[in-house]
Length: 255
Ligand SMILES: Nc1nc2c(ncn2[C@@H]2O[C@H](COP(=O)(O)OP(=O)(O)OP(=O)(O)O)[C@@H](O)[C@H]2O)c(=O)[nH]1
Ligand SMILES: [Mg+2]
Image (cartoon, rainbow, N blue to C red; front, top):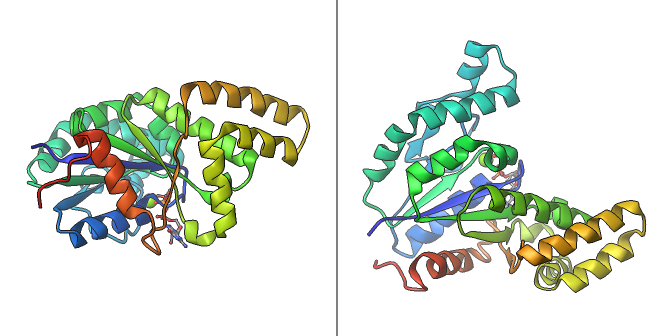
């Protein structure tokens, strides 16, 4: 039985690394085997000790020095260098006998959304056993306008990477319950999002947003967002259930 691969993807600082650690601890606590893979060549310090670490192949600081690049240019070069080494990385990941592979990705979401190399990396590492957890940061998604922008980004990632996707609202412990419930209602019902957009401002930008919104509704972007907190542990069990539903039709992994 191949392991289930879960990728944590989202904007800088949305909580990818913290959630990778929280899901790892939750799975271990439930008696499942899980490993972590760090795909961020620029990661500084991580809460978890990655079982497979891309920095063993490509280090951002070294790419910057070697090619005379700034941090963002180096991230792009590093993503391409990783793609060149991906067979070797994949062999190391495949060498683990485990139920779950949790994959932490670089902060620059556009690397994942726009670079061909991410697609190569995902295909080689995970085949068709992958799910993307796309993380919405409440700092961006707490306004209707910011929520629509986050929806667009998630739709772009989904458009680029043909892998099943679940959407999560992270750090719910940092927002009040009425606030995260409001965000949840936007995800469940575009009509309420549309109304909140109109409440925020009636200007040219809102007009553009409402038109985007109609297109997003057609493709079903961001439906069923799940509130989670790495701090309180809320919602982590729901992530597991959603991934099992997608990859195993709802069956539990044998412990
Ligand atoms: N209160 C709270 N803070 C969180 C939670 N998850 C993450 N954070 C904080 O948010 C900040 C960013 O978290 P990271 O996990 O580093 O985010 P990231 O997406 O991996 O960041 P980059 O890799 O730099 O893009 C840190 O200060 C975390 O402690 C959470 O569930 N609750
Ligand atoms: Mg991180």
